[in-house]
Length: 248
Image (tube, rainbow, N blue to C red; front, side):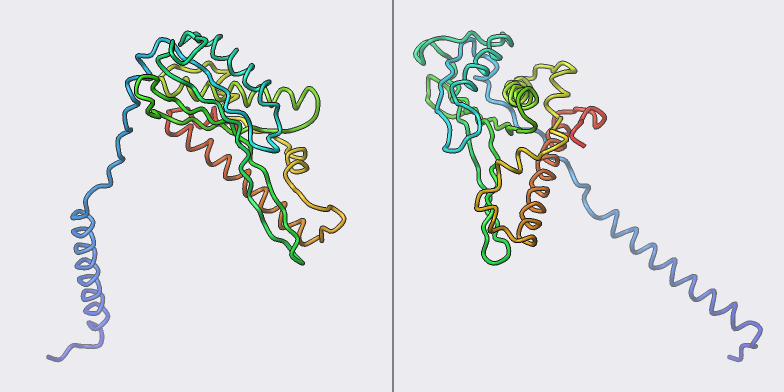
């Protein structure tokens, strides 16, 4: 078949168009055939947590180098539970429906810098383990980070926020709504972390090389970013609007 030169461009265009339509149709069919991704539904919270009337708060103490006095933290959290009023605090495990085991954790992350220098960053947190008093079965564990920033009054404020945040997370678990102040505290992090960096880096400062110190600081900033990502995930999981997540 002879095709004039004037018709050749139009013929090529038609062929390319047919190929493109065919490819688009196949891709659309393949996309339609793929099953839609379903978001898994939230697992139910053990019924004992909602039905309980009485709780006993036990103090498991603190890991070594935990930056807050364990007795002081225990007293503050005990008081916050009383103010909440969801449960009656009792004086012995035998009287309780739930046993709340408070543990002050120090989780260390170690990094190696130049010339073999080692840097250890502490990520302290409160851990509240909820145990069914009748069966002695662990029902749930709540972890809440401890933030340290500033000195004196500023440091005391962040310590208090860290303590109340643990109870706020407990409230969320029971389906209790949070106040605007509780939401703000729960989703906020210190704007400056100088004191935490000083507490967290262990080793002889005189022996720290510039490159090694920058590596430790970089890893510390990554740790802070991970904490913010954790807060963002907590907000998303519990329906807290992004505008109220103040960690950014």
